Picture 1 (cartoon, rainbow, N blue to C red):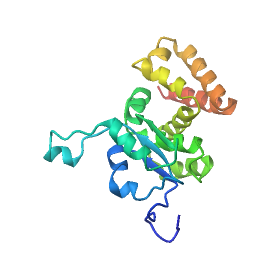
Picture 2 (picture 1 turned 120 degrees about the horizontal axis):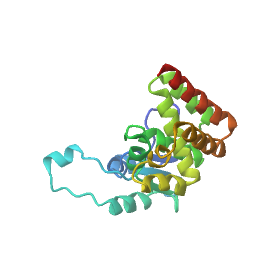
Picture 3 (picture 1 turned 60 degrees about the vertical axis):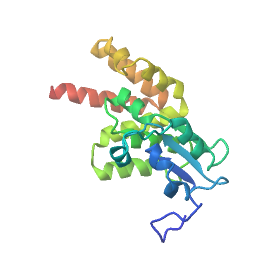
Picture 4 (picture 1 turned 45 degrees about the vertical axis):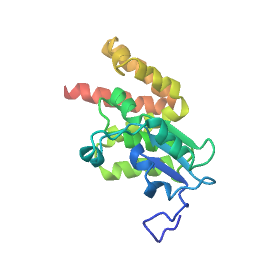
Amino acid sequence: NSLLTPRVPEHHADLLLGCDIIVAQSDDSLHCVDAQRSYAVVNTHTAPTADFLQNPDLNYEQNDLCVTIRQQVRSRGAHFFDASLICKKLFGSTSPSNLFMLGYALQKGLLPVSLASIRKAISLNNVEVEDNLRALDWGRAHAFAPHVIQQYVDQGDAGSLPNKLGSEARMRHFSRELRAYQDCHYAKRYRRFIKAIRRVE
């Protein structure tokens, strides 16, 4: 894409990162994608829009929206999941869903940006840094092993499994998860963070 314009030229988008499926399937969005080059990563959660206020009977069928997008991008290049629901279960809030999706796209190799660069940008933004980094990494995990994330979602409460454990056992449980997901340094950073919270408490 051109670095000289803030807008993506028609049919030149490599990735449609749709944090809202209704916006993602709009004409403005779909004019940017191309069936030969574009991928799509789309949050299937539908939120009320201004159109709903004027027409309460308006009906957006999720399957129809997915089909519309799928037809405009590469064959088998569309990825759909309810990021808002997953984040609600994992974090108790839908706010991290955009970073979750960014992590997913990054892990799939759909972003021409390094993990280190994205982490640095999040840190420089200095807004809910730890939460956003966690959401980014959970999104990467979902791209790598979606069945693991689905287990948490299916429980109805992402904290239900760890909460059955004592505080020390819980920390050991998550340390093992983080070590298996990334490395021992990541697990050690988690333990330091928990211990710092305990000292404050």
